[in-house]
Length: 402
Image 1 (tube, one colour):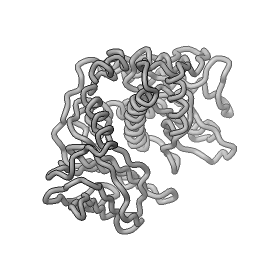
Image 2 (cartoon, helix red, strand yellow; image 1 turned 30 degrees about the horizontal axis):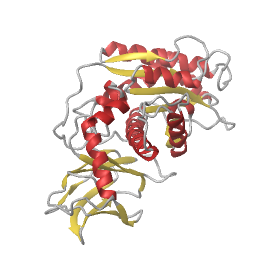
Image 3 (spheres, one colour; image 1 turned 60 degrees about the horizontal axis):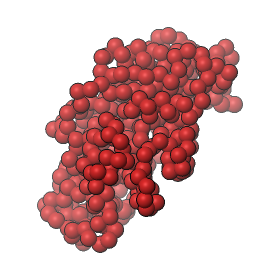
């Protein structure tokens, strides 16, 4: 298996991290599919932890093995209950929550771990996913993202951090590679404001973000463009993959026919986009480039899907971190985290987000983006989000320890 995965990922520094854990995850997945997985064992659950605020809260259940979950009961008020079949919570866990969660109680009933979340306000599950061991983290993590319903009053308080936990990994000594993509450019002006073009705003913001990141000495920054030129979408993706990027950020400015519409938002790749990227990768198209071994097409697709799913999970984790930081400097759209089939997000092995910094058609947003001070504050929030995403000591919603 190690040899097979080595051929697939070609020794890439980014993908090589956690390779052994990924191999183990493949074996577990196939074993479970063939009825070979072990039955319930004591102490399958290590701990439950939280991050976020009263608008968006992440719940992480740390496990000794892979698990699935089903919603046993979902009510806006006063609680939300999930069950994990085949998982033993031992003597159970309980305690105070964070953000949207007032308290939690974990117990074992009928051969399943039952997690009951008592909520402080109405909430919905925006996404659920399992992260296998990887990047030095030795446990499985079942992640539940809770979101206040659309239209609910936004809580402007600072995020509440959960109690510190012992980091399970050290940040690699080499600098993280960040690719900054200034949207549009050259003959493609992008959206038009009353006195400025999107291509101008995105380039100015990209240069400011590069300045702030390089000043830390922690990152190697690669630009898809640093002048007013047009770079095709496939080339932007190739730049990120060739650089073995740890993170790709595409900067844009939104537009609307309603001049009152304002606020930042972040896009990650949709499932439709993931299918598009998979077809490209398997067919050798311009957005592909993963060297999958010849052989069983089903095995090739499973290995590609594992890579894509891990990448999409990391993209979503960073999107949440980014929104938490940007929200302290600028207004956000009511539905600020969106999924879309966007060409610049199609790299199957590079975590990527597209940031709409605000609406160029809104007078206040446009002035904020065009002002050097506003731009410095906004890109400062992005830089701090990147620091939080990669910091091993982070205890909020981070990429190092989701």
